[in-house]
Structure formats: C-alpha cells, structure tokens
Length: 144
Image 1 (cartoon, rainbow, N blue to C red):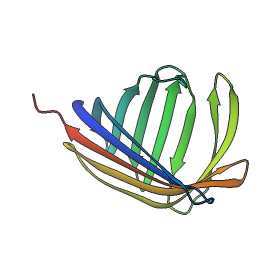
Image 2 (image 1 turned 45 degrees about the horizontal axis):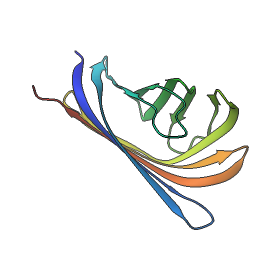
Image 3 (image 1 turned 180 degrees about the vertical axis):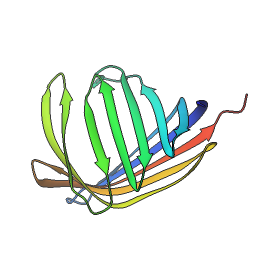
C-alpha cells in the first residue's frame, strides 16, 4: 500500500580544492514496500535561473543496493552498492555527461512507515574525481 510521505533530502559535497556545498530539499511524495523492496517517489519542480524543468525521482531500495532513477527534464540512473563502481550517463537538454559513483557507505533503515537512507560516495566525471558526497534521505509518513 502506498502512503503519502514527507521526504527530506540533505546532500553535501566536499571538493578536492577544499570548499564544500550543501543542499536541502523538503518535498512530498509516495512511499511503499512490495515483496521486500522499498520505493520512494517524488517530484522536483525546477526553480531559479538554472531551471531545467520538472524531474520525477524514483528510489528503489533492496538487497544492499539503492538505485536512484531520475526522469523528466534530466535523465539519470545511478546504482549505489558499497565498493562497486557504477557508471551512468546524466542527460539534460544541454547534452550528456559521463558520471561514475564509488560508494563507501550504503545504509538504510526502513519500515512500512518510513525511515532513512544514507549514502557516502565519490563522484567522478570522465574518470576524474569531482567530489566526495553524502546524501541523507528521510521519509516520514504523513498522518492525516
């Protein structure tokens, strides 16, 4: 059964040059479990000068793997499995970028009422290290 959920996403990047960036997104979406696999679905509406348009994000959590699939104004599928390099193509209206992620932490604690997903990984563009990243997703059931 799908539940309405509040989804909080916190991301941070540490760059080899020494500076850091952080982002936070608070949105609503859907959360459900089917056959031992958890799913989180939410939409991001574009905003600001770099607005590319609406993006729907699907997060699938199963067997020590987290897959993030983004569709719409951008197209990207990334799998996070601890210690396993994943290559993907980030596609926008401006073109394609070859990305790779090397996760060193893939953890989640989920029940049918929600929970959290925690990822730490290195991000590479064209095989060059771009940043060390953290991503924390908190999912909480909306109580009517």
